[in-house]
Length: 162
Image 1 (spheres, rainbow, N blue to C red):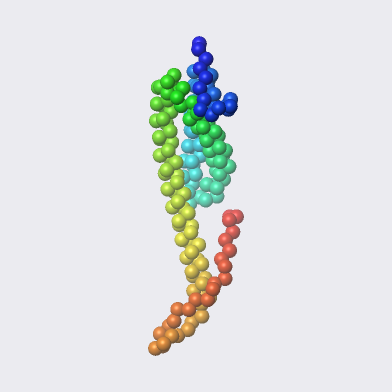
Image 2 (tube, rainbow, N blue to C red):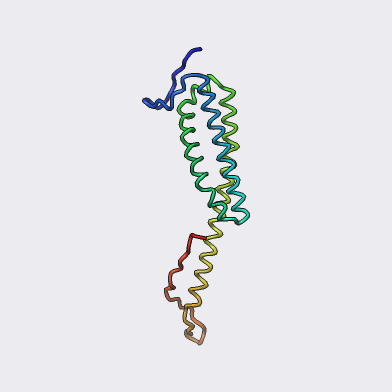
């Protein structure tokens, strides 16, 4: 078997694929990591949709670890994409298709996270406004109409520990 050397990052031994077998191992590893990360992301998405914030927060460390691993493996794949495309075109195409379906899951997760953030922010602003309106003195303006006068409200403290 011919040993191929291909890397786009000079001096980085981790990024070099020396054989088709190494390429298959590298690809299998990133596919497994992608599957694990996707499962954590799907669990987080479902927990957020159900309003189970503690459950979603508990997945943070796993999500961070799988994300870190995925990024490192993706950099290795990117550094060797020419080799993979030339030597294992079917595997390269399968990896690209899998990445596209993974991207769709991530986009859905980001939408749910953004929605959760917006809802949480709206609730906190609503509570803050309600507290500020209760603290405002009742005064009357010209013509005997109630005047809207706002004093600086006391800061609202939010505990992130639930």
